Length: 329
Ligand code: AHG
Ligand code: MN
Ligand code: MN
Ligand code: MN
Image (tube, rainbow, N blue to C red):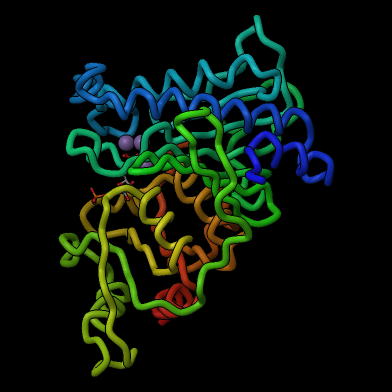
């Protein structure tokens, strides 16, 4: 008998792994992702492709879908009674639950559309979310600045040939495939484990000349293959959507890297700690892998600001350990 996401969440509730508010919130995220899926699959037919003509707070040119999916997220979670506030890659500041809705006990952070350079070429994209407990009293941007270790749930939805929701509530990693006929997410993979060893890496090689020496050294060794110090050949992939890279790592192992580089010292990496690195690091650790910024585990970093960027090395433990150790010397 196939298990739906709702049944799975009911079981997690019975087991004491989540409470009712978290269950309601996760069901709401799953529902809104079907709405996003509908929009992205219709593409040009729904008039959602192309640039919006605006920039977000991080100076990125927004695609129409960045803005549309951000609104779908807000509309999809604000009414649930599960959240006190939300924060997004596409909003300057956090947004408290509007007065007409009941305030809940959680904070949600999201990258409503990841891989936005892929939208117009019909390549994989996704949404990423991170949930933690809200403090008592008034919620401000500072309330979100908690270590990733404090997340109570994290996940992503990948829109590709199949639409897949991947979730952890701190008890392993589970994948659900959307059945477009019934509109249900069905559990299709459970207790995912990332192999400790791998022969596959992902990095945007076009930035090579800008990387710091430890990353230069490591990638050079990867390219040397079986005659180099690592003694084995590596294959490379680059989808340009973190969701798709992490999904591949969860499915068959690998190392994914987005290092800091020397172009803009104010930006320690490209990816965002709160909306991208933290939720993905929780999934990766829950599946037995490792995620660092080259120095420390991502989940132990103390965030300093909402839209903070961070270097990311994640995936199969042996390789993440190796590149992290290279940063020590
Ligand atoms: P976003 O679309 O949410 O701004 O994130 C894009 C990120 C990430 O998904 C991906 O790993 C990376 O940017 C791709 O970067 P390149 O443009 O260097 O390929
Ligand atoms: Mn963006
Ligand atoms: Mn992103
Ligand atoms: Mn995004």
